[in-house]
Each structure stands twice: as structure tokens, then as C-alpha cells.
Length: 293
Image 1 (cartoon, helix red, strand yellow):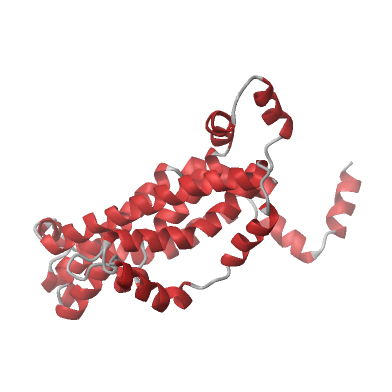
Image 2 (cartoon, rainbow, N blue to C red):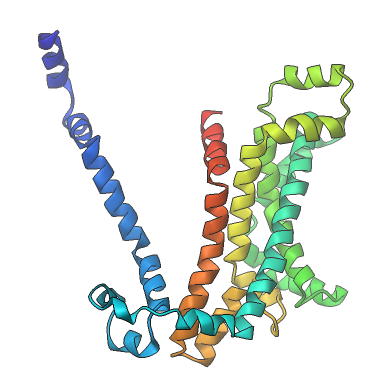
């Protein structure tokens, strides 16, 4: 056995031997270092948000490790008293939550219809949905802005939500249709034999089985809408903009207002992270299920 093992090792290519040697503890250390490298801007932003303006101007954020007394919550107290930032966070939530819920609900209903219901032109309509995936957002900005102006929803929260829903649905329908199509037909037929209608079949069978894919879609949609700046800059109300636009306006008006910008930017970044980690298990399950299928 020892001889055979030595022969197998000798026949391995150089990349295979390097990959085998790099496994285990060495690879874990490398991945931890890579993770810390990618987290460095976030750590720097967090530390900067906990420092006084004079300290930020005098030295880099890494100096806090030798002077921990510089850390203070004064900046976050100022943010909580800043009506512009608080109103922009509320405005962002009023846009993000409906846009995410509507895309998930409508996408799930349409995905189920395309996967398991028969209706005239089903395949052609699905091809139209696939074709809409390649339409860039920038192409629709001017015509949609004119349309929203005519019907009176330009610079309104409803208009921003409607735009995000319209451009989020093609991906949602495509993703969920492909996921739902992998559900065993025998399972659905057994539910129909038990007297389940389409609505009950969708809510009691398809939705629970599609939970990981729906959670993944919800996370993607939430992150996209929350971090969006282009659509918010054009379609949102300029007097009560989302957080991304509000922070951009703070930079333009008060270039050295770092005591508000740093904690405001960190708060706007932390909320999507909380949502992601809250649904992390469902997200991983959805990704793994899609990979296996």
C-alpha cells in the first residue's frame, strides 16, 4: 500500500501537489487574511465614525490602536440629531421594503405560472421575460422619467418603487421559474389528487419548497434597492431623498463634515449586512440548491 501511494503521489502534477499541500490550516489562514483585507475599508469607516473630526484630520484611522481614548460615540449622537440623515433612512426603508416585497410576491406567482400552469403563449411570454434581462437601466431613464412626469408620479416614492419593481421582476421571474420547475411533478400531482387547487398548491407546497430561492431573491433585491443611487437621484423626491443621495448631498454641501458622513455611511451599510446575516442560512441553501440542480 505504501508503494502504491508513493507511485500515485509521484504521478500527480505539480499544481495538484501544490493544491494538496495548501489545504487544511494553510488555506484557512490564507482565506482569513483575504477576508480581513476585504474588510479593511469597512473597519476603517467604523473607526473613523468613532473618532473626533480633529483626530481624523490629524492622523489616519489606524492610529486609534495606539490611542484608544480617541474613540467616542459623539458622532453617532450627532447623526441621531440630524434630521436629514434620519429622514433619508426612513425614505430608503419606504422604498426598499415595498420594492422587495412586491418583486418577491409577483415574481413567485409569475414563476409558478410559467413553470406549472398552461396558458396560451406561455413559452413566448417567458422568452420576452428573458429578453428583458438584458435591457440596461440607463436606456429607460429618459422615457420613464417623461412617462412618470405625464402621469404625475415623478419625484415620488411610488415612482421609485414602481421603477425598481419593473426592473427587478424579469430576474425574479427567471430565477424562481427555473427553481420551481425542478419540483417533482409527482408531488404536485399528489397534492392535486388530494383536492388542492392552484392557490393552495402554491401556498402550501411550492412556497415552502422554494423558500431558499425566495430568500436569496429577497436579499439580492433588498441590497440592490437599498444601495441604489442612480434611480434615487433621478426619480426620488429631492426634498426627502434616500440615504445614498442624502450622503452625496452632504459631501457636496459640507465637504469636511466627516463627523456626519462617516457614521451615516456606516449605518447605511450596516442595515443591509444585518438583513444578509439574518437570512444567511436561507441564502446559502438557495445558492447550493441552484448549484446542485
